[in-house]
Length: 237
Image (cartoon, rainbow, N blue to C red; front, side, top):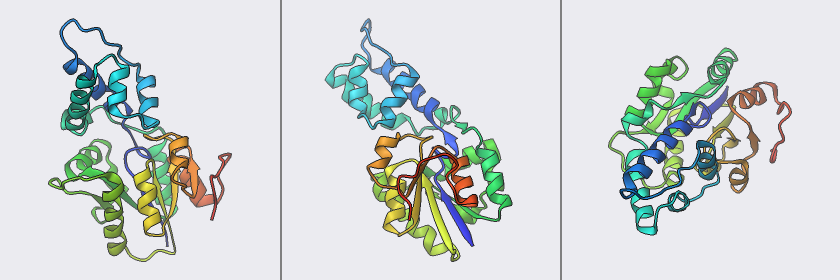
């Protein structure tokens, strides 16, 4: 049995608008009355996020001072994963077709995400994604889980999944961050990194995934057809 374990945000869901709306909110709340700030465009902001520019530096570039930048960073962490902002998430182009193709090919499909149960349920209900991921193929954080760092927490999710899932002849992990790559490598799972999420190619290359692909559709074609369809592999096993 062939299996794909996929991250949720990045391969399937586009979070860029949510993150940008939170950036705008935090900038507005942090600036002083009559203070002149320089709001980044969405493209500028998202490129900085994908390049792993620290929150404080984004705040400083937007015209806040050092003390405000600290406040901005804290407010952002408190806000970005709150319910009012999940409405700004959207499906990645081609994601549903890619999931259908996986399903039709008989590939075992699981989702592994740092979202909490309520956050994942919100998106599943909004986009009818439960048809692709039955409850025994969903691995996420409990609503009361105390997060540490994604790069530490995600390998724990992988351990949980591998303990529960039936054996597979071949398994791939697909994700858009260093946490996904680390989780897969720690458990000797082949890993594809996707460029459609919150890390750019330069950042992904630093963690040496087996393959880098543009998006979920390319990943599915690679798994099913065994080629990269005009993409360039970082490395192949």
